[in-house]
Figure 1 (tube, rainbow, N blue to C red):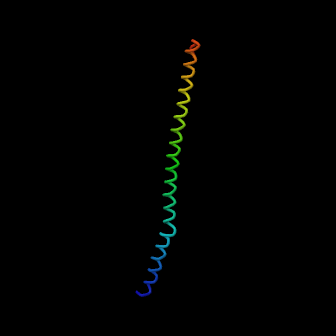
Figure 2: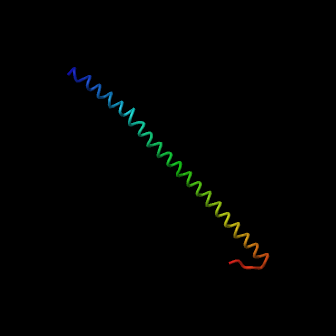
Figure 3: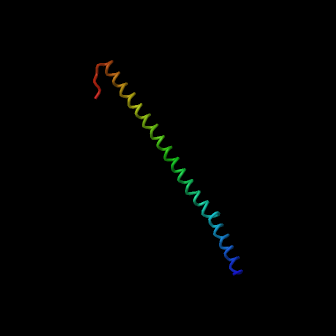
Length: 78
């Protein structure tokens, strides 16, 4: 029984090293990738909302400008 103890200790140390030194950074990398993907997704959503707002305001201004122009000239824009 004395000979198996160092072997089991070696296996335990090896398993611990694999978990800490190999699996932990891999899992942290996956978690970080998910976090970056979420941040990029939220950022893209914010940019899309800003673009929609800017484009919407531009169309409103354009429509109101043509409306005021037609009121001045008496023409109807089609």
